[in-house]
Length: 237
Image (cartoon, rainbow, N blue to C red):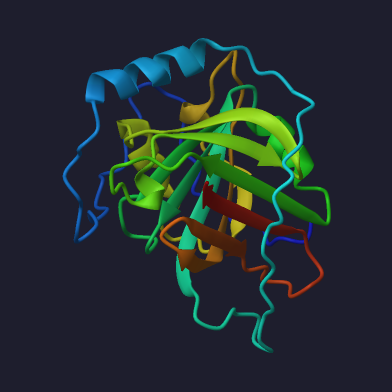
């Protein structure tokens, strides 16, 4: 984490009367109508949040792809996306993917690992997050799948659940829309006495679509090859 440039977010007072940021994020141009059973998905999310955070010993055995970078650090054929990992230190971390920093996230995925623990994992040279789901008969787009099995460096950590952005999620994205790359702590009014401070890590990612059943996000490190690497794989099997 030390290799990444720290970004400064304007401080705000912890007073309850502190004004909330005005949400000016734009919605994605195209949004497919929901075809899933909303009640069933909500039930899964509620059940997921009731589970304790465990560290299973199962291993992810699939061979994950590698992509070579060009001299400028970009992957040929990839598109750029903005990725943000955030959450209160003792609560589950959330991954937000935006097509551009001023847009509403196209994906919000809550992972079964505490934010503080995930940030510690970022201390390794290369962190691989693999998200796996099963193929179904319908034609759901890959990033619209509601439930994933999550692995970090081959170790199963539990599940990842897709959710719609809450008002707090949008406020966080609004606060960070001027931040291209960085890590830090959000203002005091987003701190919880029990769960701790809201921390974040934000960076540009190269988004590589392998097929309708596979997609990968490669973090673009502003320090070249001197900092930690983060790869996020979405695979439908």
